[in-house]
Image (cartoon, rainbow, N blue to C red; front, side, top):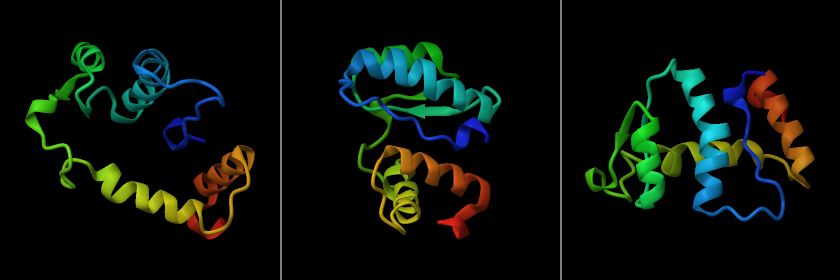
Length: 117
């Protein structure tokens, strides 16, 4: 399965603060996948967390500063307004009981599309 089809899970009990988000989720998981999929060009948009904004300005090829986009714009936040709705619809077609079942469902969706679940 291609890594860009994989969900990124946070282990139970881990506190997701700014450092964890930058050092683990962005640096180790999300940005490497984005580089693989985009062949090194993508535009990243982030909220106003100062340390994270500085990090992304230094590590991404193009970055939209929080001052340049309205935070609640459906045009600039497609994940919030469209993609999450599609993901929810596919995931919740049937009940998910635990993370293992969600992982299995994700693998089946990646392999077979919406017909599988």
